[in-house]
Image (tube, rainbow, N blue to C red; front, side, top):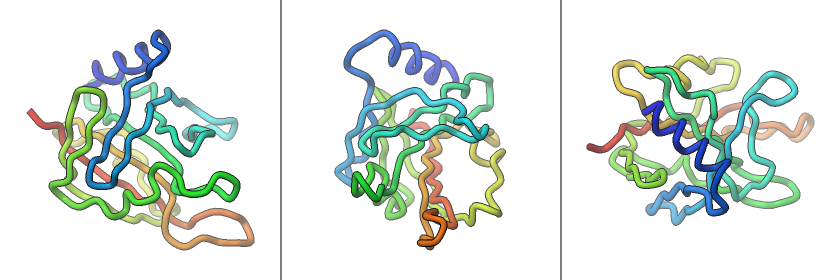
Length: 155
């Protein structure tokens, strides 16, 4: 699957019509944009809440394909990943021409999040979708958790 990520990232840089992510059960269809590190050293998130970021450094064997998107924005409204917390095992996600089946959805406190579980696969390289979730702290304008969805490639 790292080859898939490399091809998608190169394609994003070369073509005017980027590959899309589709989640039919949630009526989601959004373009992919390559993302890297932000200024704080964390994972960059697309500025546009209607785009999904693909982690451009997922290229080593065993790396998961990591997608990130907004749940919402104070200025832009509901984000493309607003309802991913509702994904259930068996739901299907399409990335370009490839399909994946959801195996698990979890809400994880950010302080308890183990990034190796997101970026590095166990035995099978997986698709991992991440957005904010949980309780929203109005004082600091951040959610306390992340919604993480793991999906396995379909043959």
